[in-house]
Amino acid sequence: MTIKDIAKESGYSVGTVSRVLNGTARVSQKAREAVMEVVDKYHFQLNNNAKLLKQQSSEGIAIIIKGAQNMLFSTVLENIQALIEKRGYASMMFYIDEDDNEVEQAYQICQERRPLGILFLGSNREYFSKYFHLINVPCVLVTNSAEELGIKHLSSVSTDDKAAAKAAVDQLFLLRHTNIGILGGIIDKSYAALSRYLGAKESFAEHGVEFDEERQFVPAYFSVSAGYAAMEKLLDKMPDVTAVFAMADVMAIGAIRAIHDRGLRVPEDISVMGFDGIDVGRYMVPRLTTIRQHREVIASRSVEILLGCIEESSQEVHEVVTFHLVQGESVRAR
Image (cartoon, rainbow, N blue to C red):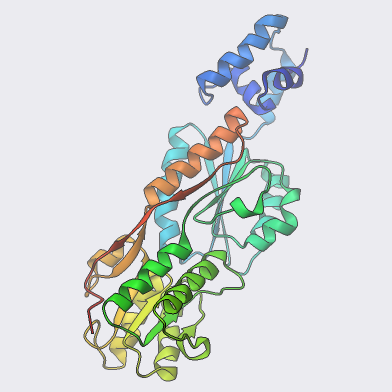
């Protein structure tokens, strides 16, 4: 009888069995009882090989963050790290550019650091469809849905970006705006950006307003500087704009500054709607109107799902977290 035999009969991973046998607290009671039932059945005794397995196994959770300037990720990351440490695991953070292939990065991390699992903050779903078969540890997409991909070992916790973006633009139409511009993101590289773009377009269609992509949409990365530059381009292309939907609060912040630098006022001349609900939006002048993602829930469920897959060999889970519109001061009726 070996540790691998116990893992097979108990239905738990070798890592979980190792932690049970070595008295580690980072195992659920259900897993501990199942493993010990097999141990007692075969009178298994821990030997030096099992101790060596524990010494060689990783206790870390890798977190890959795509885009260093996304403030939403910063706040979600703080919550994730605290929850991981509370459960007794170490976290390993890896920042990559928005254009990088996060799955290739994950494969390299698996080869060099042997993490127990991986959390992805920001992702291009195309990479997962093509390359995820190289990854053999449980993973969770955070703020992005993987349900449609149907990939084994890949879970997700997300907001319904399409519905949330539609709600944001619906609000602008409700306030009698029709000359509406859209800022960000790069829709062929970000599934979240694509979903928000489609949601915004759906709102235009429902309100019977034609959407001119060339004139009314400026793609850009999720950052303050990119939002500023995108707003300048929009003002040049669409001088009659009365409202803007920015796909991220950081872009909205940059956009508001660009509007001010053109001698215009927010919201008197141009209303600005954000997306994310980051804390700094509450302290801006004007206070930002935005779609708030519930980052605490996203963080806690992402960690719980990943550790369930690690400790109890749970199946992949896909959850959608609710959102709500935060009424600030950056949007007004026409």
